[in-house]
Image 1 (cartoon, helix red, strand yellow):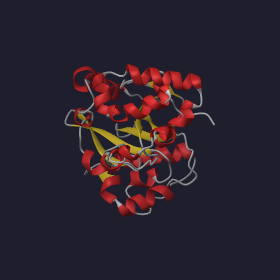
Image 2 (cartoon, helix red, strand yellow; image 1 turned 90 degrees about the vertical axis):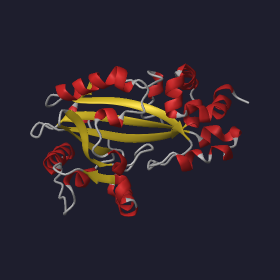
Image 3 (cartoon, helix red, strand yellow; image 1 turned 60 degrees about the vertical axis):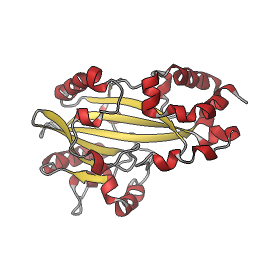
Image 4 (cartoon, helix red, strand yellow; image 1 turned 180 degrees about the vertical axis):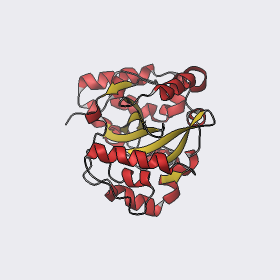
Length: 268
């Protein structure tokens, strides 16, 4: 079985890397009933996986309509917030961005596969605040990303992918601490099975009626053993791993996995 996404083959570090995609490619699917995964998380951790700002319901409703159209099915909110109702029907996490007081802000999100952040932590934040930890984002990328949001036109869907390495296959990863605390228990000879490439496939599109933007996040995890099984893919991964800048490595904490990944790349 081939990897669904392998962004390290084209870029070692954070980059905007957006490309237009066809409407039929917007939602990737791959999960028969996402609500079976998402509903228990909402019940157990409501503030980690759902948040909304006042005044976001009109844009949430438009987002629900857009998802329903893509799925070619009606979605009954059943007294749920509209964006949450939409998110139960898709594998992706859904994040609503609206321009308020001159800045694009996250006004609602359903987050069942966040990579080391939670819904309550980020709701209401601006683009600059959301990407503050990203090396060089404010100095080099913030203005460009803001222009991309401002320039979104109806019907245009943009896609990008990023990646990291973690020692867990779990999609729900609100905190890095419990995962990274287990790194020392990994047998170096089994690094390929214990370490996972964690890829986020993200899309962005405009909601024409309200002027909001809908940002989707679909997370895929694959054990590094699947990469190691293909010499060409392993070579590309090794090149990206070694080429990553100190800033990128620090941001992703790749240094925590250096010895284990070296064992995988170079052998015993």
